[in-house]
Image 1 (cartoon, helix red, strand yellow):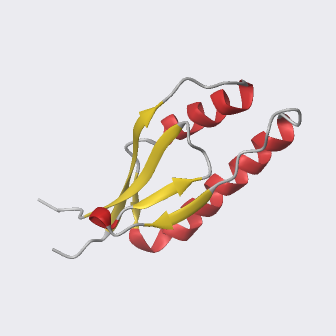
Image 2: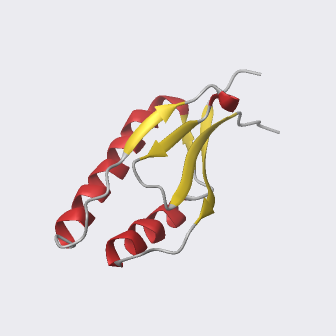
Length: 98
């Protein structure tokens, strides 16, 4: 089946060390389980990057967190890198109309 969507998932995570990390993790948790159209993946990544920039500006005393995305061959997932406290990825999915 042709992949038409991405499912946003959050895997293992560790305890946040500061307020910035806590808010970033809370934000990513709100996205878990979201299904987006495959053509909107770059828009979604841009939304996440913007939110990270907003939170970095809010918590200037904390070490900034970057949002970088990398595609890995393992199950064709796109992973968030630059924030080691949480495993966050987009998994290819197919929406089936019944």
